[in-house]
Image: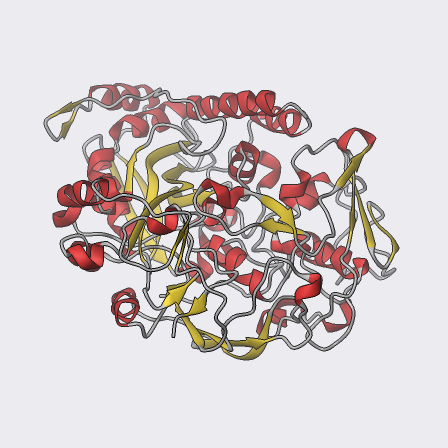
Length: 583
């Protein structure tokens, strides 16, 4: 999933690592705030107290609230309040949050035919907020619209499009399906049962159906791209009002029943999300209690970081954690001069990763990276194909200049993309530009808002070719907590789409594609992890990605919120399922 976070102050870097390192973690369940990293160890302010208004804020506007048309971790997390996928992750601290459990489904999937067929039963009695009953046909339709109507809903992943049995490009999605029959590879023999038929075995399919793309959508109520404005709820909350670019208000869903939902608690009376609020304002409001959660889970900005980590009381309300994600620069293998592997290898050596780390906020925001897989994903193996040498803080450019001479590009020019509402990303891109000047590459930044970054710019191959985009700033986290869930959408050639694309390098390597396909079919977990490590190394051999940092987030934990727990499943964010208001 796509992620990004804001800049942090360099002044706080040295002391920050020491301050947090000296704090112990929380207990299994903490009754109060005031202990740094407590939410990475247990649930802070555990409570079943009902009532109040829970306020979120975000510095931009999400690309979409439609569960079938989104690809940001924070919306995957937040959407579960109103949209129930077949499976989901049980709230828990750190890696305990990776525990997959049934949600809309009664149980985990029943595989057959060697893992090519997966069957699920929908829980009985689940209703939409209008009182109508959820059916298996609604889940089928949700998958069809989110994966096959790519000209209308292009922002989510396309796993189902790639792996369902009868899709060879003929099915164009429900909006163009005149027969209304839908995909033959998804069967609904009755209103409770849904059966997925795949081209080949998919050992981790239970993870795949945790995506909000499996949250049901009744065809009669679908409004295409406008469905985002009034999603029909199956969760504990429903849409009350939506002011585009300003505010979303959720209220309790009266049709929700705890008897059909063992995960949700429905604690606040109302949930308000304020949009396009300056990050500095969000940080202040978190500390005052006017806002209880920063929806994006990006962490505090630089000025706030410095203040928090030098204040012993406020430091105790912070959580600093890994989140299965990597900050990197994608090198576009289809755009000159980076269609030449020697040019790409030169960049691997030339980008000053220490300087980039500083621009991102220092070690507290992530350690220097050399692999595609983050250190907290199973299958990670430590290695460095492009080791950087420093004389003090000065990077040795000998290898960089050697490979640049081999590539023969001379005085090259290129464009680098970044998100303009993510100051850390702009700062990191600026540092990359400064690094490349030293080997004769002149780069310029073009920056765009998060809400349009992948739909209109970075994720559009035609745009990148037309605008000479050779480099794209990116932060990526796993779609689900396995090597495949991390690697597939950024490395498989079949994942490249004309909009909403996340294979930003446009890498289409037959060996990597084949390894991904064979790995996911293997029921042996250890064998899959070995394959993921091999894919990682082959990608780095292609120099398609420049790993910068294994990202860590520093979040402020509001003492006025209950049930706060930082989970690996959603990139270190707080689990949004059951946050309440402390009275």
